[in-house]
Image 1: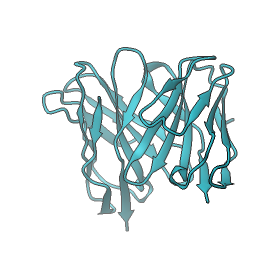
Image 2: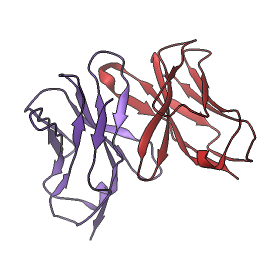
Image 3: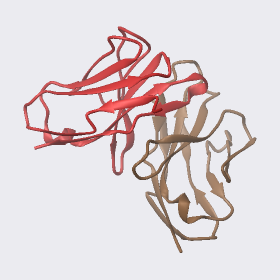
Length: 111
Length: 114
């Protein structure tokens, strides 16, 4: 059974709209991460969290907010979506030894 | 901040030939963790190899890599490519002081042809 799940798997949004991407993990890991994947840029860290109630800015946080209401759940919020945020988004949870476990990804298209 | 450089964006090889994907890194920390993650089409990225020990070869699933701190390198190698090795490969770096934040390279797309 998948330990990191994401919803929705695909999303089409309009420019200026609000988008929420959700992530759930059953690994009981303290750390969770949101990345976006773009050709030529690889995986870039947007926000991460050390535990419930905590969020930290990653390398490219502008235009994104994050929320960690519980150990299991970590959301990425785009308050005003723009076409430049069209991408594939991956959530991950972080285990011991710095290994990260990724979800299946969410393909977001902003028109 | 930290950075990871993968010089080849695309690598195409014939089945049976050796694989070498380059990875160099920059960090101010003296004891980093280096990783190779593999991302197969329609799957999630997953860890392939990791190391924090200088000059020690690490192996998994036929692939190997050796961390060389003197040259800040962690190249991925395999003696004989298989069609199933076609995937996107990421080299990544973590500062070894407990925050578990990983910096990924831009990735190398490896395509193996018959």
